[in-house]
Length: 475
Image 1: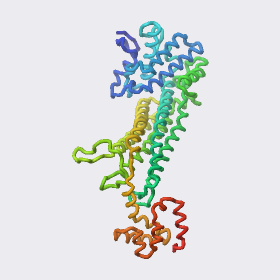
Image 2: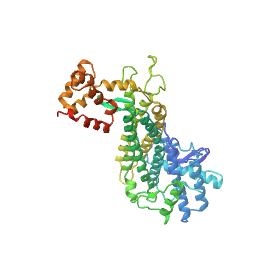
Image 3: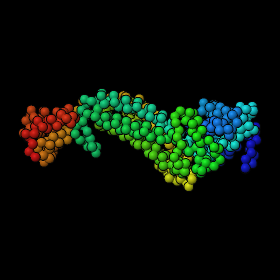
């Protein structure tokens, strides 16, 4: 056991752990949920690499002894490699803003650096505040770490989205000749192809992916050097230039300094924007899932236009019932991310003067949204999209009998005539084409050509058709 001291007194800590007294107090005070910092290794790592960059910067400018800086750097490398898991016990929900997280990382690094230099834990050689936190404040470290974290999460997410795009592209080609009935307000509309419907899904997902990729670069920035309130008190000359250079090398991409430290420290509106982008992407994927759930409904008393893969039984009492499990999973993801977005928006809007102390809520919810999408999109693609099959015959029959085809009568003979034909077709249970022929509105030859469903799904061919039959126009 080892004894550590702070302003509140002494505390006995196990020699097995690398965290210190401040992390221990925060753990005791805020045992509120089952989520701890160890569950967010990417976040811990984002803080840790800032500590390495700061140590190397302070070494470069002569503010920190080389052996201490190198020991800090090695300790950080071990954290990033996952060798310190179990030493970040603080709850994700905690009072004190980012200070408990910052000090937890400082203490783990200091104890390990001391161990490397002296053979034992403690602060004899490397102190968590004096050395590991040199030239820093929680108030510039944590906002910077949050931004770097978002950058990496966007990077992960945009790598999985093209898998869905590719699957949708394949379905566009596969379904290009599958004629079906379009529907608006859940009622019959005019014919289209299933491939055309999927082309709308494809563009929706592609647009959201491009939006995230465009936004990513804006997150590779920070406010290191701002220290407590933005004035840079306590920063040694040369530190700011050096820390961004070293952080960029460690991070793997250029990290730029915010133009205005006070803005970067005080305001969190960027997190509202990224949370909204995640909600928008979730809404896009869920729109597809909602449509698939409707189009696959049945199998005998629903739309039944497509069949989606059966992944598990759907009822405890009805044999053979299969539920649209994967679409429903995606819809639940949207519901959760929508709630997360509300929480993030509230936390961001409650900035107080120089800092936002509600970082725990912001990060917890944004990270959950990223994780749900990064894991959910590939699952949805593999277990649903790729296995969709078209019920082409059923879809064609629905399109052929629809009274929406009276739109062609309206285009040629006026809305009044089209409405009359549609009403008669409904009353007799016949197709519009049959009624148009029986009522001698069109000849058999004219009707066959005018109501060719494949032509009616192609805007260019349809315009040629209307031009050809312009002699019928009585409008």
